[in-house]
Image (cartoon, rainbow, N blue to C red; front, side):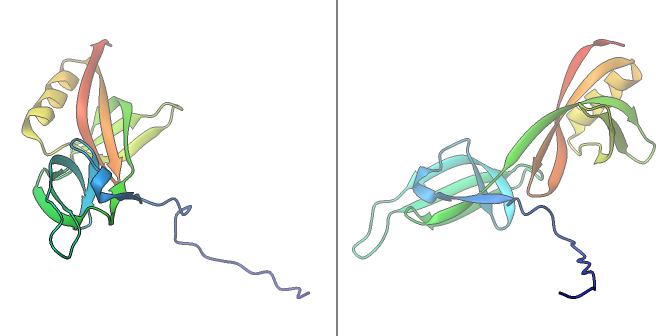
Length: 159
C-alpha cells in the first residue's frame, strides 16, 4: 500500500437526484413535470388516441412554479418524463434587509439568509406590511431542482 493520502475535491452534492422518472400517461392535473429544464405544475393534460403506427400522446400544459410562465410539451404516453422533487417548508420571518433579502428562522434554530423577497407584488406587499406592523409571520418556501422561492405567507399573531 502507498503512504500517500488521496484528497478528493468534491464539488457535487450528495447525489440525490433533482428529478425522478414517471411514465407520461400517469402524470395528472396538479402534478409536477419538468418541461424545457424547468419545474412546472401541470394545469391541463389531454391524451390523443394512438395513430396508425404510433403511440398515444400526452399534451401537457403547465406553469413554471418559479416564474409563472406557461409551457407546453407533447410526449408519447408510454415514455418517461422527468418529475421534480418539490418540497415546501415553512420558516419564521426574522428580518428583511435593505437589499431585498429575508432572514428566516429554521426549525433547528439556525438562520437562513440566502432567499430574496418574492417578485409577486401582492405577496411582497403583504410580507412588508405584516413585518412593519410587527406581526409574527411564517413564510412558505417552495424548493425544486436547486431553486427556492417564497410562495406563501401565514400570520401567526402579534410578537
